[in-house]
Amino acid sequence: MITILDGGMGQELILRSGGKATPMWSLQALLDAPDLISQVHDDYFASGALVATANTYVILPDRLKHFGFPERQAELMQKACKIAIQARDNHGSGSVAGSLGPLGFSYQPDKCPEIDIAAPIYETAVKQQSEFVDFHILETMSSVKQARGGLMGATSSTKPVWLAISVDDIDGSRLRSGENVKEVLPLVEEFGAQALLLNCSSPEAITKSIPLLSECRVPIGAYANGFINISDSFNKIGSTVDLLEKREDLTPVIYADFAEKWVDAGATLIGGCCEVGPAHIKELSARWKG
Image 1 (cartoon, helix red, strand yellow):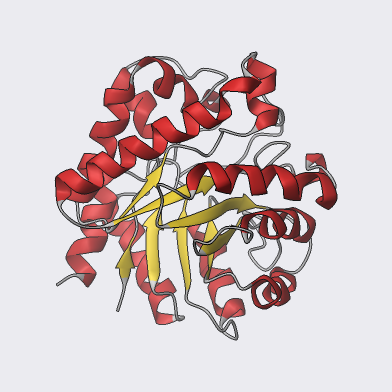
Image 2 (image 1 turned 90 degrees about the horizontal axis):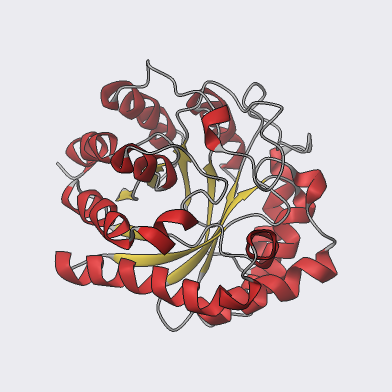
């Protein structure tokens, strides 16, 4: 059975707001336009998604401290989770996932803190989410160290934890850190993660990665991004996503063709990341729900 996940949140919010990307990413909408977040969740469910991923990716202390309100983490976490819950309830079925982004910055594993610093940060985050979500998902983990710190903290939760790793866009056999993608497999078993996914990487790289995870003992999956590449200047908190250029060739049909390859290689959890929207999820749903 194939589980259809939702698609990206941040780029979809920028598209709908008609505004310019801000340094706070999707957090800006949580502060200024929560109704837009509700609309995105609603549209993903209407397109066939079975999961609403709460808009909590950037609700971590390093981001909040940078923007001047570190004391609001629990409040914002609860707000984002409740928006996802309401969308799920309006739809009448589905699950809510609590997103946990990388510390330091996305795609920059060299900036992540040491494991003994990262783990308690994630432990706090899952405590703030666990009352509301059905499971947690560590996203865009780009090195073994980053994944270990996240898992060490997140698996303190009573709720299941999924791990999503991000790979090099050219060489999908390697994490963005350069480590072999197979090096995360022992972590999945050690910490009892209940799914292993590839996320926020090019669909071509993910197509190469998925077969390398075939020996994993938990469900595997993928949700790719629709960026041409990750700019070298997109490298620190405060960088705006308008530095990342959208691909024009990744139509819903072409994206689903990539997903067919992932499923053939053993993936059972399929969705989308940045620049993959409701139309893509609808095409995925049409292929597998049918």
